[in-house]
Length: 338
Image (cartoon, rainbow, N blue to C red; front, side, top):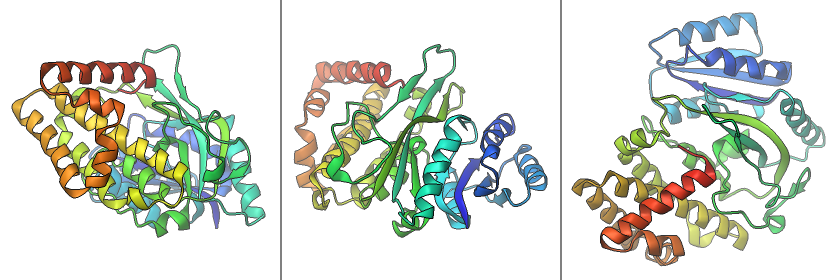
């Protein structure tokens, strides 16, 4: 068995796939690299096959019909032979100094059969044209370089969340969570992290900047204008977060607090994007979003609706919309997304 499987969902990635794969090759024979060619129409499949020929036993090309990012992640999980599983997007890369340190942690725990549900590391918002790169670190909230449970978790700052870039799940654990990411849907990263996290017990945090999350392509899914065009996909992910995790029956108060805050920020993003779109249709969708939460999850609605940020964002009329957009712009600057 390999120590780590790294899946690279790849769709029309010919211009940057080389960089992603080459950053992962120093993992050597302990790492399985799966290039998931998601029905690409450019040279992605050819590049994947070439890497497989050059690095047999390390790189494997997996070709499939187009199903979107989430479907490619699910195929990677299906094919994985590693003890742990990591997703690296085809336009991102990993740090060469942090990589061996992370593998050392996985190796040590595998040798001792001290199997972890989740391994966490930092990631860098590698935003094009920005000199100072924002780093998402967790040292204030999580014990460093040791195994821990939710009992030892401290306070997460506003805007400090575990994203796909910062997590490595144990493969068997992840499979047992039955995450079933929807096809042809962007923003499923939130489901990938959120659903298994509800069952996570044993964790490890390594305070290294392992993952570089590139932001800057004009067609990137996190660009605000594109998120507004794909708002129905964001709303689907938001709805599935409510459906697939029973927030009120989580088994630890600190887990509940973190998961509540995560759900709140995703719902806030949905609300803000619909407000920013500003069309009658978008504002009606915003109303429908909250009406559905209130009717389907009344207890969760009470928890979220009267949180400070929601009280401001859902104020009626032009003032409420201005406050929503102001808060959204501040969060963009603080967190560094979009």
